[in-house]
Amino acid sequence: MRPLFFVIFFSLISSLNTTTQAQNDFAKLEKNVNVRAKGLIQTLNTTKDTLILKSEFVIHKLYSVSEQSEREIDLNIGEKSIEIPLTNLTKGKHVFVAVQGRLRIVFKVILFEDDEMLLAMNDKKPMKKKAKARLLKNERE
Image (cartoon, rainbow, N blue to C red; front, top):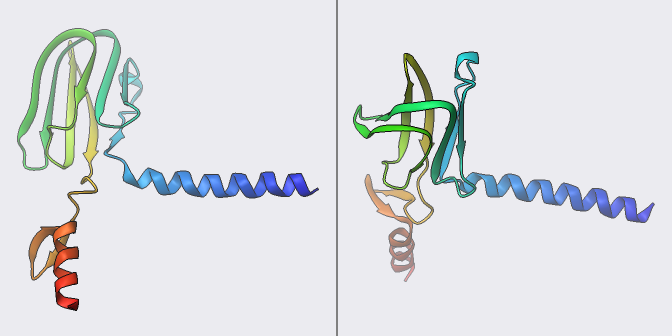
């Protein structure tokens, strides 16, 4: 009975730990689940900083539109698979369009802020987290 208790306790603690770590992701992918889009496999790598597209058919073109309505990626591909690094894109929502012949497959990638670049508001001026900590330390002294 006692080993069973430890197994259950350990599994509960481990599951809570994985959900806490999931909040530190670099990006989130919202796949296109349409039946016509099932030929395009859309995934992120394990560190979630690279978009991986694989297909049975040739991907002719790929482009993305950011929240500011700017095309940050505009590529002519001509291959069945590609890896796109997301580190050079601006933070926020990006709508990706993969062109395969007459078919357009649309999906969304959301890029989150890095831990070091989290912004804190002080007097309506954005500043880095470290700068805010220094400011609070100086106010205490």
